Every structure is written in structure tokens, then in C-alpha cells.
Length: 266
Image (tube, rainbow, N blue to C red):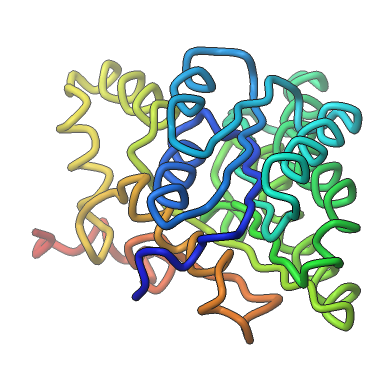
């Protein structure tokens, strides 16, 4: 594996100040990329701006004007655009009987951001034969109880990926989607704190409890997900397109329906 495989390549990352987005920016710059990170104007975006060859662009990845500004920055900084990584997203809970604004806000954050970003970036990606990587979730293939909007939006990202692969593959653009399971990001930390509080558990114990049914018996780290994204965004995956890559520590491979009866879990 070359440690400079992204030298001369420019990558746009939405949600660049978040856990997976930041880890991806950090890894790609280590491997030589020029990175433009688009995200809310918050401390996370300020942190990513400190990485080498990285420009932080405050904005909304569901706003076409903001995305065009970020694409323009990438073309100015790197002279080209080789990959787009869509990490922007929001985790919410609620059934279809819950409030409509939550539904629409979640679809905007998780689906519209990917649609608007890829739509705005495609002309530049066609010029370079570039790559699109969308970040879905285990909830993109399995339903999460009481998370209708989140589950729906993450499922839709898989359909968007396959459409991009089918429509723009003949023009040299690849599109793939990664489905992480539990990842130790600030967003999931908050969930574990809330769940753990209700059960009298601290955060680490809640993570261990949640991972007790997972084949690898743990959550992933953002840096590990970044490695998978780097593979899909880079030259080593030149013949991979339209793929749904599970990065979930094995949980999607296991039938858990009898797990409450299993007394041998370690």
C-alpha cells in the first residue's frame, strides 16, 4: 500500500468536521490528498482546517450554492476533483406517527446532502473519471426500531449509489456506498450516554453491552471506517462500482433472532 496514493488528487468531504468525516480528511491528507471539507461552522470544522493541504468551507451540503462554492474551492486548490465523500448526516429517532419536521429534517440531512453534493460535483468528476463514496449505515439494510426517517434515508442512499453507478459508469465515474455499524463518534457517544443512563451504565459499559452480540465484539473506530472510504475513493478500487460495502464488525452476517436464548455469549 502506497502512503502517497492520493498525491495529486483532490477530495471533497461533506460533514468534514464530524467523526468519520474528520478521520477521513486526516487519513487522506496523510496519503497526499488535497482536501476540501464542507460542514457547519463549528469547532469540528475549525479542527479539520488545521490539517495540511485542507481548506474548510462553512456551509450546508444540502444547499446547492454552498456545495458549488466548495466544488469551486476544490478546483481552485487542487486544479481538479477526484473524489467526493458524503459523510454529512443526522441521527434521529421516531416512528412515522411522530412529528413531520423530524422526518423532513432527517431526510434533508442524510439524503438531500448526498443528492445535492453529487449533482453539483458530477461535471468535475466526469472530467477526471472520479469516485463518489456515500456513507450510509447498517440502517441502510436493516430497520432500526423507532427510527423511521433515519432508516428510510439510509436505505435511499443505497438506491442513489446504484443509480449513480449505472448512469455515470459509462462516463468513467464510480459510485459506492459504505454501511458502517456502530462507530465511536461523538454522535454515538451521546446515544450511549443516554441509553446507559437509563440502564445505570457508564458509556464504556454501554458500548460493551451493545457489542456483546457483534461477531467482533466491539464498535468500530472512525479511523477504521476512514480506511474503507479511502479504498473506495482511491485508485485501488478501480473496478469497484455500485457496491454496498458493510463495515459493521460482522453484525449484518449474523441471525440474532435466537440470541436472547444463547447463554454462551462472551
